[in-house]
Amino acid sequence: QLPVESISKLSELHPKPNHIRFQYGTAGFRTLGNVLDSVLFRVGILAALRSKRLDGKTIGVMVTASHNPEHDNGVKLVDPRGEMLEAAWEVHATSLANAATTSDFVEQLEALIRSAKIDLSKPARVVYARDTRPSGPALVAALEDGFKAIGADARNAGVTTTPILHYFVRSINTKGTKNEYGEDSEDGYFTKLSSAFKKLVTGKPQLPPLVVDCANGVGAEGISKISPYLGESLTLIPHNTATTTPGALNNACGADYVKTSQKLPPSLASVLKPGQRACSLDGDADRLIYYYLDDRGQFHMLDGDKIAALVAAFIVELVKSAGLEGEIQVGVVQTAYANGSSTKYLAEVRSTHLFVYRMRDRVDRLSSPQRLPVRCVPTGVKHLHHAAEHFAVGVYFEANGHGTALFSPETQEKLESHEPTTPAQSTALNHLLSLTRLINQTVGDAISDMLLVETVLAHKSYSGLEWDSLYVDLPNRLVKVVVVDRHAFKTEDAERRLVSPKGLQAKIDDLVKRYDGGRSFVRPSGTEDVVRVYGEAVIKSQADELAFRVAGLVY
Ligand code: 16G
Ligand code: ZN
Image (cartoon, rainbow, N blue to C red):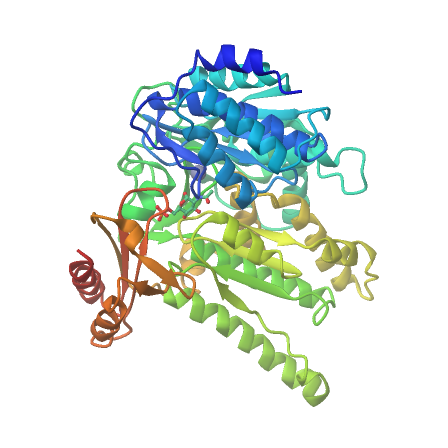
């Protein structure tokens, strides 16, 4: 029986504001922090129902607006294996959030319970956390009212990063099983990552200290907490750690600032020395962008595409060295925003390896060549994640720095049971096993990804410059266009082509043809009321011009 009385009573304390339509989008609910009270209350109840529906498995709730300005906030649900909420429930979330009154809300809850066949006698278990935003505590209080109203067993994970919350969810749900993911505490998380990292870099030359821009967000706590675990294996120099200074969060710092402005955070201008590498996390520490200054003090960015290239090539190499080539297929997933040069580079990794392969093994194994397939999917972590799950090892990164690598259960088993025949194979195999522990396989994780990058740099003895030289980015430009109705823009082919408005794609094609190395696409944003235009060309001025001319067509 649904506790209608307690739900109604508490719901009256969290009325839905009139004239606002909420939507559970690519990143959950996200808007101004001061209008989200009713949403949080209702999400509390929805999370409990989701848990009941899944037989009492623990569901995660994260209160964050990631890289958005400090006054924004948001909330998203995490499914039992630590992945994003199932798409069908995004729709339930949206309609519950928009119920005008308490009685409408209760009515919708009852309808959901019937249609989704939710057994109310099952337990409801939830774990929740928030980032450092000032609006966080009040929103968490509203969320807790939701848990209380329905009687959920809720665990407060406090202030922590989004990926740590995802890690908790998976760890709690796998506890005591053979797939146990980790210990469900911050100590468990930091121990797991740091011990894997230390194994991976043992015997490798020590890298110079790494400057970390923490975006004045929760990542600052993560970085300061992991440092003692890392000991001498890696020195981190945290900057932008002012988590309590009003207005500081993501302001002229952080991964999104660096990626969109293609600039060094001004706060690091006097810190970073030529040749030194640094990285930026975003406000909830699930995105990561690297960069360095060259000898002339010029800024160079190493974005998600560069990370994917570095990591994928490294894993391919280890798989080969472990003697598992042909058995474990590594694949890469990108979105249309991936720089054209990165896609080309990845294709070449494949052919180089294929070439070596042909030389050695000739015709007999040519029929099953080791390819490094590169797939393109629509924007949004869930699309990338699901596509990556189809590979034995799936590496995905968005250009904006969100990404990870997934090892399928079969791959995990293969790695654990494979008998190496040489010491070199054994070393490579152990490295692969350590990677499965170092990498947060639930979601993109800036801290875990940072240690992954550092691992590869240590193995390769790469500086930022050498990593950067894997390929040269094509100049590109991103433009936002405010339109009357962004929903009029419909895409196909992983957002690379427009199907509506009618005739627009043909005009874009016409323009693109006139630019050397030209590429451009238009898609409606999933997080803002705008249409985004991307332009890429061989010369910077041409990329800019292409993007602006396509924007002119859209407007
Ligand atoms: C969200 C997505 C991110 C995507 C971005 C695109 C998640 C967790 N985050 O932040 O992956 O790149 O939206 O925003 O899915 P846009 O649709 O406004 O371009
Ligand atoms: Zn984020």
